[in-house]
Image (tube, rainbow, N blue to C red; front, top):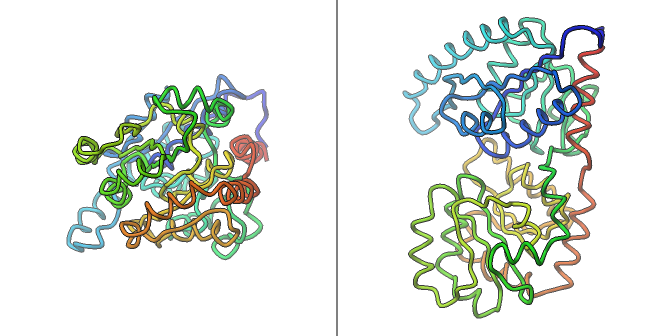
Length: 372
């Protein structure tokens, strides 16, 4: 057992790749810092992924590993992937050895595997934060040596040892909840009217090609229905979107590659169109937002479809498969947005799935492991 009077706690937090992994990791770090201001926190991420920018911007140190995912399209490229994994394991081992953490926390993403593997080998306790309703191969392997696995969905004992599971939910950015009562202020921020229904379209931090293309060809349908749009295109699609906006008769569309005030975007929205990443779903549950989910087909084990179905089966969301979105998405969205009773029902059902104080509960488990 570790005594509170000893040196400050030291934590390694590993993972990233998308905002859905990075935001929870930073939330966990921030909560640790609030409780233990003298704690030392070191992030380990993947060299060319967005955590290398976002984590230092949040005020934390990060070490990058040259790790990358398997290339299923071109198997020869996996020779490089294996070489990078070898380098990553050596660097992770060196980092763990030098930093001497009390615990290593994995939030998913390429860097989690070598980090938690090397931490376990060095007899450092590990905790996994599994965000999805369907566990990937890596986390199933890492779970064998993990002390605890914090999950957001019921039924995860089909992937992990039941005695290690704790249902905590996924960490959610605190500022999102705090702005929910500021609808009119939020609409003013986007230059939109409080008299009209508003649909928020988000495809994650990188964007979602199918969602963008489903929307952009039918922008005039929103105008005809008297519905406003807040449209986040993601990093790769703003130019294409602007061309369509220029030809659109409706000017009550706010469009950008990134939304700086996501709290206002949620507060303004009567309906959300989103990918089915675990982090987004946790936010939508907590904020009671009616949503149409368009799961990404480009993820391991099709886990976004499984995330979405967990809500659909409880009448807490609608789901449109990626292949059907170009044909169906806009007409379904306009239909739902114009149906007050349907919006209310979706809001009530999704709110029942919310997990409150998730970050605090995860940190409780982390500290319990250290002090055991």
